[in-house]
Image (cartoon, rainbow, N blue to C red):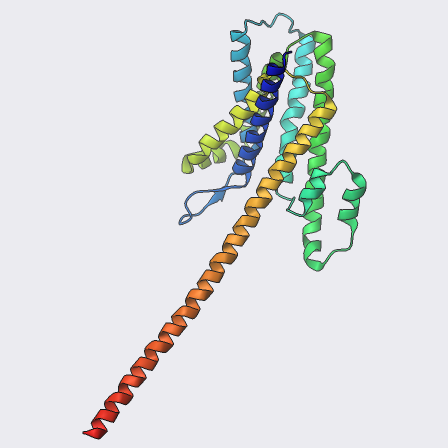
Length: 302
């Protein structure tokens, strides 16, 4: 592989990953709708994962056809492996998305250096104020969910590492079948009688059409990153996942912090305006009193 190709793959992979992480944060945490109306957050993540899976599968199929690859090496044994990976791959992101609801800004450092268990334990177990104690259980729950997500990802990556040398398949074949089966499994789950997520997600997209663009871009970036011909081992996948999950939390925390600063600034402006209005009212009243006094003085003079 030439230096130019290495640089191209490096830039392509991490550009897609970064954009994917930012879009993931936007879709999962940003309120949609006008400020004047009732804003809502998108919370239908199985639907989101299904769209991403089908997008990745379609992208892989197009690439396979354009590059004139075939499916001759696919057999029943390999299909079973794909189904196993697809099932785990469909479950894992749910824990990741759910953990975002419970990890706040102080946990950012903890997530970034999660591999250092000593530091993590110290930060979680140190004495805290009453205010922080209210947040700690939620943060701990979020980290547990994230750990489950990483554990399942580790099993998926380990299984993939066994498949590639044994069956001599390309990454695009893995991408196509894994995402196709994941999408189908999630679709059947969404159409079960007791599950309203598919209907609610479609209704949300109909009410807030701006999210459709974000979902499609998010899915496309997640699909394109797999087209770069680079196989990562289990440790590399866990590292990449941890880094970009940390980036996603950092973006969320910064936006949350900026919103608080903006609200504080607006409150300060409102207080200054009220003080200014009081001063204007006092000056107006003084003028009125002075006018009355002048009138009385003139009347007495006459």
